[in-house]
Length: 565
Image (cartoon, rainbow, N blue to C red; front, side):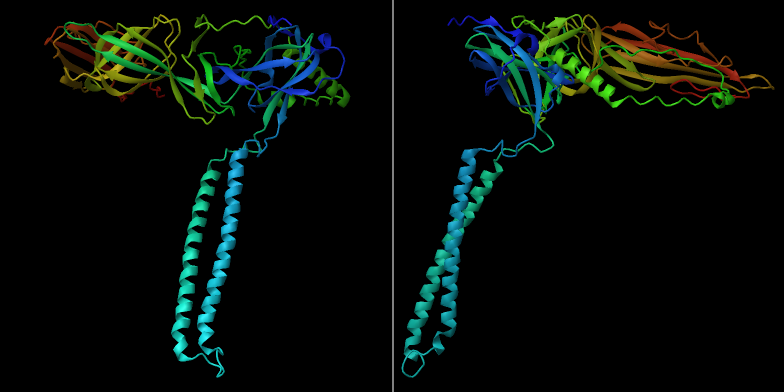
């Protein structure tokens, strides 16, 4: 027989398989070979070698994860002769407490328990002998031992010696037996602790049965693909900044990682793993937005409406027919025909998703323990900026901005930050699409000195009824670059924003013109961004005048203030 592998035909059982009895069920020894992990689930590929006789057969993938989505199951493969795949069935199998038992381990435990029982019998016999000697020692002197009915005094010493020797010997035997029994108890307890944990009764396993029809005796391979819940990955990053110096430029290394964990009920051993950005359990389309109707409330309208009559109950036969038709459609969808020879590999990047194939085999137990995997490492040329907001905090903070030049986006996640080889803490990065710019903070910069002092505060009280109050405030901010290299520094400040036409805000003419009147689309947040040479110091003046009705009080807040009536 030629062993040229032919694609397996995937089709429904009715049109392809003849009406005949199946051969005995064949258990397949399958192994998980590939896993694609999503942020909210995983796709698993099991592979099993196949050897079939000619005709119809049923093969079974046994003891699979209880969290399998039955609608996601697909079967494909290749064989040395024509092979058609028919019905695919998923069965729930209650957990067997003895399924995970180790026969060799149980045999050793039984042997040790038998030894312990033998020792217990020997200990009981020695304890009985000891009790008999003690009873004899208590009553021996008064027992008849000669014609006069008493034990002569001259024989007491030999009797005492016999009792003492007997007790010493039996006590020595008991000490040895008890020591051996304690050692056996320890060995039994240690072996019992290594017993595999049986699945709880509430967590059944799943078996997948596949109907096959072989044109001839054949050999091949069958692959079972399914999606499971209980697995996830979250992105994490390492950001290592080298601030550079006089003779070298700054550089930034971004290491992309995936923190993967799973509790699917199946261990992943030596699998080829891919992590994907696709959220498989999320909705597939935006929600339908209905019209939003607004009207004036009329309390008499609800009273005038007739009560809706309850819908007539559907006959039981019609309801059962609809349920059976829906089940038939679901089964037909599961066994949709597909060519086994067509397999499209997931690309590293696509317009709407990104995937990363992990280098080397990965082993991850189904115990929920998180494992961190390196996905990529990239060295970038960052732009450094020192930012300070002295109105709130006179500390200067170093920031590094960069453009994501990878095809894959940077997903939101935690970032471990290093600056010049020193760990400075942990930050967070939002979603950064390919080609977008990102900013990361790298802690305080002690070589940029910032001071902000008030120059004047003048309030004008009204002198007559109906007049206005005014408040003039002016500040001076001094920034100095103590580095031995040039540096770009941004200073932010707050200009009050009025949401009431009765309150006016005027920028004083003595204020230093801002380079950005509105920073980050935030009203009233203004900034001055300049290049500072080594040792250079610059001064910023900033002031404003507030004016409001004299009979009202002014309220400052971080957000919109509700207007009083």
